[in-house]
Image 1 (cartoon, rainbow, N blue to C red):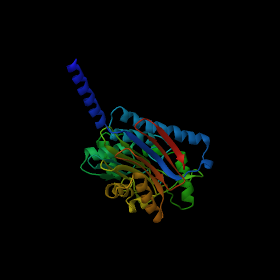
Image 2: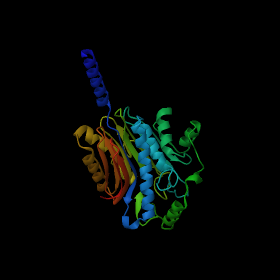
Image 3: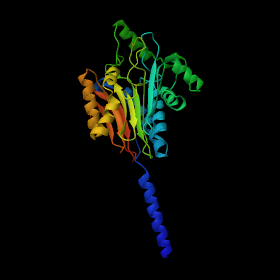
Image 4: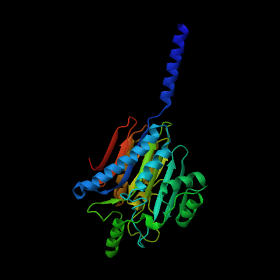
Length: 330
């Protein structure tokens, strides 16, 4: 009997030790920020966004819940949004001045600071997967334009004709702007408008943080314009010692303020909490004339979904499976 008691006690201590070594999982996503006003949104369109945001975040969460990696959770959550014409990433992305789609994406692994990105792709169906492949299957961090597309083809990543990405909605938006000789960081198709980017940050049971971001950039862009999304530290960053961040907004200002890394640095070196760090960085963006939003998780699973625009498509699921999906300001 005494031996049985000792055995059960040891088993209990061992099981508790295993449980304590498992970190809390979590995932957060965004589908762009901007002047998103409820009075300008039809009930049908709002419902479509809510459904797709839920599909994306549950896809990532289910991977985490089953012991999967934060990398896989981030990739698959973003692919759901890249495959939806609702968002400015993948199919339905905005058009360049010459009526084509040009796609950017980046991914960062917080465990070892490895990263990969692509910019100016014309044919990669899911840019986030190509960014991960650059990280895992090349000695480089960032590939651009034809080089990015050639790399994807060589690695067997799905490519499609550029026409696959083009929707009537985006074509109408572009032609409206061209008639006004304007470049837009938002979406003139609706009365409301948004910065088109999708992103995700996740933390898995091993405490590994991953961050990914994907976009079609700005409507009517010229000269091969590249924004913050494929720039590690500007539109995307992850480090297990502090946090993971994905940004959405006026890319030039996010580059100038190195927003994603700036948030991480505040947490690392000033012991700032992730929400205040996000607010501080967005204030810097505002001071230079830009706006937008960020999502992120710190190493303890605390979440940020801060923005200084009227709204941001966003969702979060915590360790217990509690879900929050929002579009407008609280």
